[in-house]
Length: 156
Image (cartoon, rainbow, N blue to C red; front, side, top):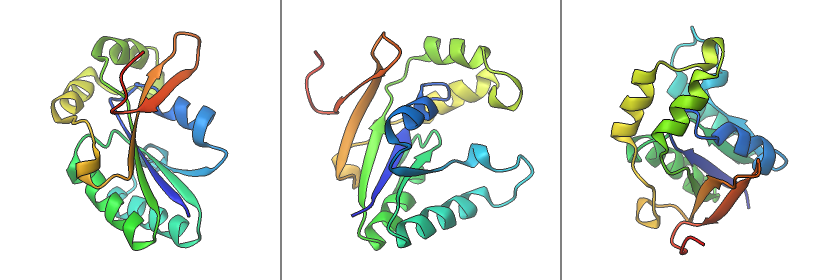
């Protein structure tokens, strides 16, 4: 059964690095950041790519900020329509860290600080009540990797 992995967190919170290191071997990446800047109808395009991958039986990771149910609700609905598990990967906000990592980015990858702050205002922790089959919390482990645990498990 394919999975739909919804990455939820601020810009520069480690989502794309997490995908590369932990999910890329089994999840196709869909991200609006990969579309041309001038692309129109990015949401519709994203949904079409997610649906096509799930219909083909492939797992998908959606790497956007996905800060609220307005963004992840339609993704969960598509997962359900294709019999896929919907899994959230929650990157708890670390505003100072995100701003620092974002400042080190170059060109189009760098987001204006106001955009990071705007996302923080909308950011909500996902949970099973939102329709996810599982929710994992992802944090940097301090050694260049990630610590992943179920979101309801106590932090060690």
